[in-house]
Length: 293
Image (cartoon, rainbow, N blue to C red; front, side, top):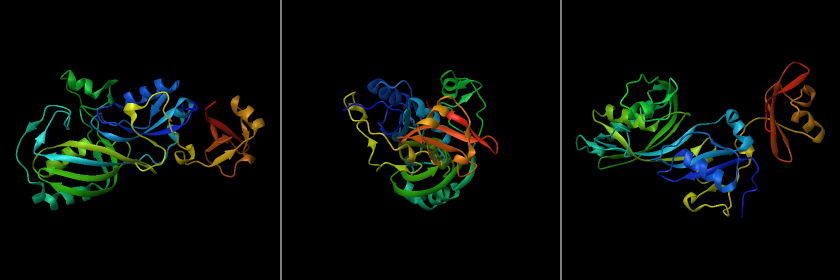
C-alpha cells in the first residue's frame, strides 16, 4: 500500500549506520514527496526515533514546543577516539572496573540535571563561520567551538558491567550525548566513548508508538508508511475553518480576531488538515504567520 502523499509527520526507527539524510532521502524517493525534513540529527552510530515531516508540514517544525529527547547510551571506559564513539579508531588507555566506580557515576549523572553549558564534538554537523565542524576536523584545521546551553531533565543509571556504563538521559534539543560521555570519563579521571546510542523518545512520542515505522532497510514504495496525527506533534490551539475562510487563508489575508478565543498563535485546520498558523495582528485582526497551502 502506497502513502497518500499528503503532507504530514512520520515517526521512524532509524537503523544504525544510516545518516539522518539517508533516512530523509529514502522516504522522499520511495513515496514521491517533494521535500522531507527532520526535527533533529541522529548520529550514524545511533539508532532510534526520528521525527520527519513532508512537503509543507516541514514549515511546522518551528512550532513544536516539546523537543526534549530521551536516549539510552552505553559508554566504554578507558578508551578514547577522535569521534568520541566507536566510529573511528579506538585508543586503549587503561582497564577500568566500572562497578567499583558506581557511586561516582551516579553522582556524575545526578549532577547533570539542570542547566549547563556544553562544548559540541569537533565531529559534528554544527556550522562555525559557515563551515561544518567535521570538515575542520577532517582537514586538521583548528577552530573555536562555541559552547551551548543545554538542559538535562533527568538521568538514570541502568547498569555497570566490566568497563561499560549504560544509562538513560532526557535532554534538550541540540545536546550531544558523546560530549556527556566524554565528561563522564573526565569526572572518573579516565576517558570514555559511546559504544551504543538509541533515541527512545522525542517529546511525547516514544519507541512504543503504534504508528512507528520500522524495518526501514526493507521499506519500498509498496510499503505502508504510517503517518502521525499532527495534533500529537503541534501543541497549539486549533481553529476549524470552512471553505470561505480557507479562501482568505490561501490569499494570505487577515482574519477577524472575533473568530479566535485568545490572543495567541493558532493552527488553522480544515478536514483534519493543518493549513496555516495565524497570530494576533491588532485588536481587530489575526495575520498569517505561516501558510502551508
